[in-house]
Image: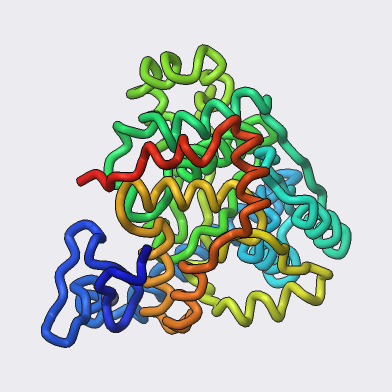
Length: 342
Ligand SMILES: [Zn+2]
């Protein structure tokens, strides 16, 4: 799809991306804006806040931090960093959304064993997950959620909301003062967000009628939170410890982590991602990872050619069929999304 589009000469944003303009050298306004920002100063302030938050919360409770551990390359590296570099007492947690591949589950077992870290799987009801994904991708579950579509697919947005809501629930119940997530520079604005989970609580409060009508009363169990006033910091270490993909992969191979096969170019754990990407491209006319990968290119953390390869890597037909079957969908259902929306 991207091959017929005009792309920025520096990053991988296409002409279909919202609010994009190109100059005479075919460089986009997002790249030009980046050139004017002093990132060293910005990052130094964030690093200070990150380290200060870390020290303040270390050793206060039985666990220092929850690691939202998908089993993908980035969160594997983050978990390793939390244990070996930051010396944290960690509870690693994986949401089993029903689409984590067997090879990824083996990676999770190998890594948590190698790092001697406590780990829990949380597997919400498969019927609820299926309904949530289908209503996200083909329906309008996220229609009131603002400008997310430049950064993330509907399927991922719903999943991440559930992951973060449950992480906050565990943190509140078990008195764990920090939650680490593997967001990259394009995905979240700050490295430390105090009580960042309240964003999900507010989303629930303003949209609970819509969520309950679309997903049933069960939605309350997965997307609502009972708060108790404890302060919890949302930590995003990749905003202050920038690592190239090569550095990450070289480092985690020593834990026995193997790149899983039969996934799309942008996921290293989840088979649903490929379908989420397809739906996003059909609905909006651009790839949901284009912005994030462009941000990594601008920060010299990824080559443009590698990013293009990731965006055009298609999952094989059999894997795609298996994922669609689990969702109770067919290719014809996806074709109904064929015209990009404004
Ligand atoms: Zn650009």
